[in-house]
Image (cartoon, rainbow, N blue to C red):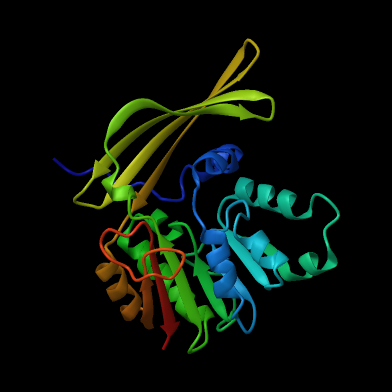
Length: 263
């Protein structure tokens, strides 16, 4: 029997956009924004954020004075990022230092050596579900960085360890006057290192109820495998960290952070 095709990791994010910030506000007990702000402060020029989504990282970096370009394939995610950043009268410095661009991180639409740093926070590279997607992305990053420039990524190690279940209520709460319930199913394809989340958001307003369903799939490599991928793409890994305070990585670390230089 033939295997099912590997899902495109870009699928699902448009439908997720209305709920992304609400879910993260309830579940994201991470200190990644402060970490990336410290890292980006050392950039000698513009910084590119891969998969910037709703601007959760890009906007604080720009407010701290970093010249940031955020790229994402999802137009609804970018619409929310622009509203967050620019809906109210924004400081001139923010207008000058922050841009959002719709594009594919596998084929970055920038000139060679256009950035002094590239960052890939919060497991965005895990949404590259096919081996060629990751290799294409790393090659694209190498092209837009000059020699000696930094590429930093943050991976989420618990995704491949997620227990499988069906139709579990994960979150309840209110958002924009509606009662939201997240009902989730998780499946694992361990041979292909794929984790799939089937999510249903039930939105209730009075007697009216709507359901929003979508699927997100992630592929997670081990740290040694990711190091090998980076080296093949023309990077030298300088640091592998296990938390946002800079402690060294080990197999039990809560996060996997790799900092590599373009060689």
